[in-house]
Length: 257
Image (cartoon, rainbow, N blue to C red):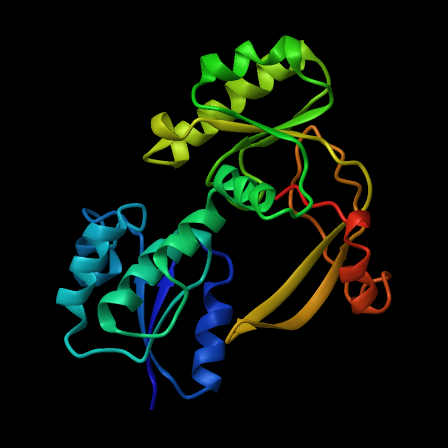
């Protein structure tokens, strides 16, 4: 029976789905979550249930002590646990994406820079290392723009601004959101991107030895024009038709997340 360490966000709404899937696959599951380390013992949980996902080096050492014997895989349910999962796989000698690759794809600024360096299409963007830097950009931007926190997911800290006044408000709001949610907020700063109008799509897939295996292509039928970009309904199969056309005609897609 395979033994899997599953990293679950304490407030995750999909946790039960992953646990049910593991049960159907007859896998032994060890669950770890980012519960408060002070509250976990009061809830009858062992230390492994209270890993600080946002401090992967500390969490990895704590997990290795608590695991006992090794596992066959380490999987993170959402973006919050990806760096810890990558670090644990490296320490345990398991297959998976390298830590640096995970860090780049989680960081919206680093990912845009990677796209730009390698000639991939992406919106125009500006980096702002502080709230003051972002506000200094207000008079030089071509509106509308989208202000983003650098490492948050699920549309948190993503706000559209249509003019300099709304940009100032958006920067302050996103700064507060990032400061509350990310331990490294002060060092990260924000990213400001050009707004791309048009329909949105979401692609779910897996990379297997460098080859993409598509699971589903979703339409997002609700018009996500801002000022906020809440996750809403996803519909599949997509109205785009043949998936190969989607990849060839990539200019017709827009991604804000």
